[in-house]
Amino acid sequence: MIIPKLPQDSPKATIEQTIGVTDVKVTYARPSAKGRKVYGELVPFGKVWRTAANAGSYITFEAPVIINGTSVEAGQYALLSFPGPTEWTIVLNKTTRSILFAPHDEKLDVLSITVPVEACPFTETFTIAFDHLTTDAAVLAMSWENTRVAFTIEAPATEQALKNIDQALAEPDATPGNFHNAAALCLARGVRLPQALEWVKYSVEKEPKFFTVRTLSLLYAANGMKKEAIEAAERSMEMSKAAGQEAFIKLNEAKINEWRKELVA
Image 1 (cartoon, rainbow, N blue to C red):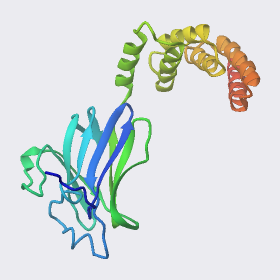
Image 2 (image 1 turned 30 degrees about the horizontal axis):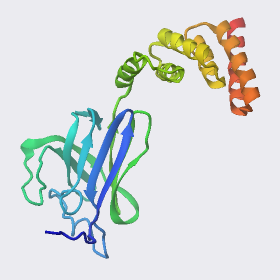
Image 3 (image 1 turned 90 degrees about the vertical axis):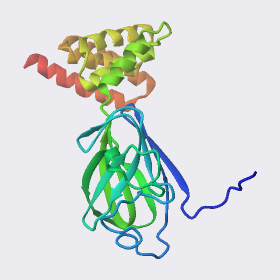
Image 4 (image 1 turned 60 degrees about the vertical axis):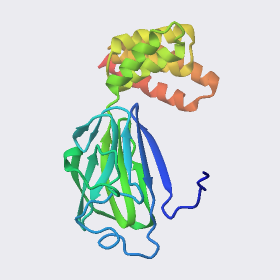
């Protein structure tokens, strides 16, 4: 039997975002207002909503996350909500069945948070999107009509990133670039600084580049070795000049001046 693929009034959508090193995916069906009053009528206040049309919305976390301060384990969850005129209750539920076909089972709830309603420009089609992306967090926003609600998803990445680094650098084919990137992450997060210095030394020895030598200078400084930091920054600056990298020339100059002042202070 052939089931023809036909246009849907509320087509399916999928959005994916990596937060830190954790993949987050949302699948949902997108209804449109089509001249109707949405909240308070089409979507009643105070009653459970599947937060989409058709089968509803589902969110999947590759690894554990923190949502508005509450820890949530990895897995797939139904994204349910109780809309209200000034605030919504957002619920993550472990059900494998859409509430279109089965009632909401509160015993399967793993998260229930209250979020305020925000005004937004008119949005014809229900939209779920990631916003305000930072290194380890993002905001998941839902907009329809003139209403927007949102919550924060945090996926702390340092611990997992260090595990990934240890695994990658233990491989016999680990490249100088791998060692540099590992060192740069440790520098950015302020962890394993002595080890990171050794990693970037290896990278520079095997494959010196203007930006890896700059990382070397920064890690010397982070380990309290300002004279060595200045020498590496001067080397990076000369390499940056040869490569026509004006931005790196200025960055190195600024750090050299800063560290020289610290040495004489």
